[in-house]
Amino acid sequence: MSERRQLINVAYRLLGSLADAEDVVQETYARWYALTPAQRDEIESPPAWMTRVASRICLDLLGSARVRRERYVGEWLPEPVPDEWTPADAADPADRITLDESVNMAFMVVLESMTSAERVAFILHDVFRYSFAEVAEVVGRTPAACRQLASSARRRVRTSPAPAATPPTRAGAVVRDFKEAWQAGDINALVALLDPDARAVADGGGLAEATLHPITGAEQIARGLLTILAKLGDMRMLVRTVNGRPGLVLEQDGVIGTVMAFDIAGDRVTRIWAIRNPEKLRPWKG
Image (cartoon, rainbow, N blue to C red; front, side, top):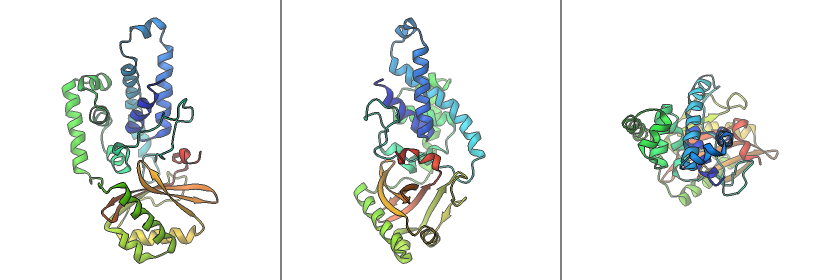
């Protein structure tokens, strides 16, 4: 059971879904306990075996997930992770997602642009430092082919907008200023806090009201935020850690309806991701 934390961390980065990651870990343990004692004794490294099995399950799920996302209503975003999240049936509070740079929302969104095999090769090798020989056992290709997959994935990362390296303390101050300007309905302050080319993406999944397409431009985003404020004037805004970075949680009548992640460069917000699909907000309601 000491491997649970590692498996959760691998599966979330591969799938972008906490619920699916938990299911993968459950299935991995089910397969382990389905082995006979003799079969388990033959496994030289149970942790490595479990990681291989979990990664293969994730690889299969990624293929079917792409088909589901083609039918998804609006934009699909990864599930946001709160800093206090632990799996529902975890035996130890330490069994949680490690909130490092490989789970910030900007990075998770870039991962979505990769093929399933690229994502697995890149995450296992570049993030978790597995050898290409070990990656090859998961992907079912040669180590050389896995090296090429990881290289292709790195090119995707390089050609995508780079996540800003603003220190968390500075980013937190910008998010608090953003919150205060939004609460005050101050469009000029909001525009000043947004990069001129800022981009906002919302994910309602057809289960919550959300714009179906990204919004670009500081003024357009600010006007959209004020429209939301007019509709939900009594909402409570809370600064929280979202995927390891400062974000906002919007609560109305005691119910969390939106979790917002930000990318911040210097003193300005460059990207906003607003997750409103209630199925993705389960960890925030515990």
